[in-house]
Structures are given as C-alpha cells and as structure tokens.
Image (cartoon, rainbow over all chains, first blue to last red):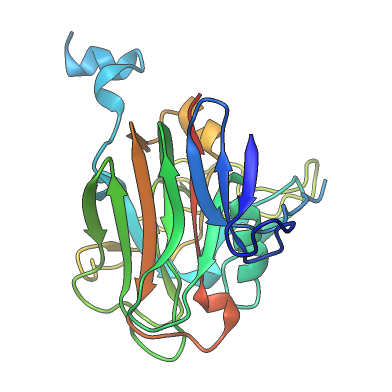
Length: 41
Length: 220
C-alpha cells in the first residue's frame, strides 16, 4: 500500500490534506487525511 | 435460484447497487450516535462532530464543505468495494437542504430531500440501529442493550415524512461495516468505482456542522 500526499506532495500528510492510497491489488482510494482516532477502552 | 433462497443463504440478490435503495432517515444531530471503544458514545451535535466524524473516518472518510451549495469530495474510490453509510453536513441557523451525490460504477445518483429539513438535523443514508448504543459492561449501561426494531428505545411511527424521507425523534446509532455484514443489514457494493460527494444549500457557521462523512471499505 502506498500513500501519496496530493495537497503537499512529498510531505507527510496532516489533517485535511488530500491523499491517494494505492493498494496492492490496484484499488485506489482518494480522501482527506485525518489522523486515526484511538478508541477509549 | 429464487430471490428468497438467495437472501436466506446470503448470496446473489442481496447486494444493493443503487444508493437510492439504501435506507434514509433525517433526525436532530444530537440524537445521532457513533460508538468508538466500549466506553465512548458520541453524538453528532456541532460541538462533538469533530470526534464523531473522526471515529467514522477510521472506517471511511470525512470532509468539510466550505462554500454554500457546492459539492466537496468525501472519497473517490477506484476498484471493488462496499459503501455502508453517508452523512452530509448540517446547518444550524435555519432550514436547509443536504445533498449527497454518489457515483457508482460511472452512474451518478443524487439523494436529497424534496423539501428543506430542520436546522441542526442530519440526513443519514444507510442502515443504523435504533436507540442509544450501549457502552460500558456490567451495571453501568448508558443505553439500551436491545436495539432491535420496536425495542424500548425505538421511537416507532412518531412523525410524518419530510421531503420524502423518514424523520425520527429517537436516537439512532451507525454501525461498523463488518457488523452490518454479519447481521445482513443492507449496504451497497460497487464493482469499479465510487465517488462520494455532498453539499448543503446553506453554509454552516460552525466547523462541526460543516463536516460530513462516509463509511466504506475496499474489497481485496
């Protein structure tokens, strides 16, 4: 799986950046990046 | 094979391919819940929306509108996958119209109420459970353990349709994808692409009300 930052190419994505995720099977997901929210256990 | 038998064994005819066939409900955002972890239950009210959609995006994506009546892309998916839930943003200062534009395998579908909905309401596209999701085991239940239809916290037939959609004054909770699949709740499957966009007729003043989200997953 590869992640490209389309808003700031070459930089680590920050909240709000538009990213492209390419999966091993060729599927592509484009969405805004938001750091995962950890659950409260 | 009959449709009934297909449905019973979980194959064939149960896939939805037209997002307009997904369940749709509108309700006050303060009654819309997401559960994240066994102790966390968050509503979609403006002050909590960042947490709500942050959790939702763990299994999908979120995006914010910035201009009135202008679509933003929540997610642009290429490949085979499943779409479970779409929740466009809201607006607090008066009635408004939320719209979701979902393009499935190249075909564009627009889902919007035919009239305005109430301020601080949300349109929820996709299946859900009635009642407040239970949190915390043992004696400190925060809501109903029974979220089946006509259970204690299911508000039932309480309001008339608005804009062609069911309105509820009761609490509801959105559901993680795998749980929906296990319990045979309706969801959409796409074969090559899915573009999720939404907008609101008027632009909210608060950041929380500008946020919307979707739940989906790509299939291997």
